[in-house]
Length: 127
Ligand code: AMP
Image (cartoon, rainbow, N blue to C red; front, side):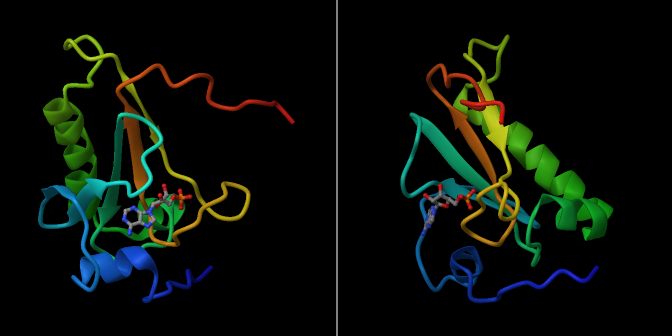
C-alpha cells in the first residue's frame, strides 16, 4: 500500500516555517511543540520531520535513524517536563490517533504527550 501524504497539512506548514509553533524541542529528525488547544496541563505534540501520515507509516517506512531520534526525543521531553513516573513525576499518556477510526485530524504523524494531571480512563466505552 502506498501512503498518500498531503503536503499542505498544518504540521507540514509548521515544519516549513509558514506558521509558528511554541517549540519544546528540535532535533535532526524530530520537532516537538505545545498543542494549540491543550487538554491537560502538559500537552505536547511530537512529529517527525519526514513526510509520514501516521504511526504505521512511520513504523514501516522511516529509517532506523529517524525512529531512534523520534523515540529518544519523546523520552527526553518526558525527562525535561518532569512527568516520568518514579522520577518525581505523576506519569503521562502517549497517544497517536491514526486514520478515521482513531479520529486523526492532522494527517502527519504526531504523538500527543499528555500529563500534569490524572487523565482518567483511556476510553469511555468498550463498544
Ligand atoms: P489529532 O486529532 O490526533 O490529529 O490531533 C491534532 C491536534 O493538533 C489537536 O490536539 C489540535 O489541537 C492540534 N493542533 C492543530 N493545529 C495546531 C497548531 N497550529 N499548533 C499546535 N497544535 C495544533
